[in-house]
Image (cartoon, rainbow, N blue to C red; front, side, top):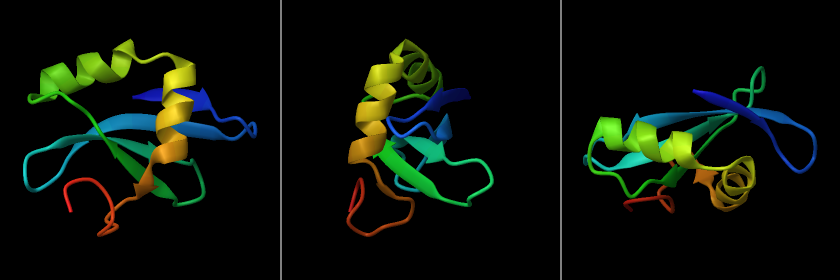
Length: 79
């Protein structure tokens, strides 16, 4: 898991998740708010997804957060 700060100064945790259809995502969680967002990863294994997440810069995390959809949203990844 990684913690980073968004453009507005809010803290977020980012961790790898896996959808039921097998695709790996980054789950963004705002501590204490209950808000969870998601965005796709290119990786096809859990280990590769962890490596992909660790390889992202904080600016890349902010970009992905800005483009992320609410977790479980039918308009999100894989739907």
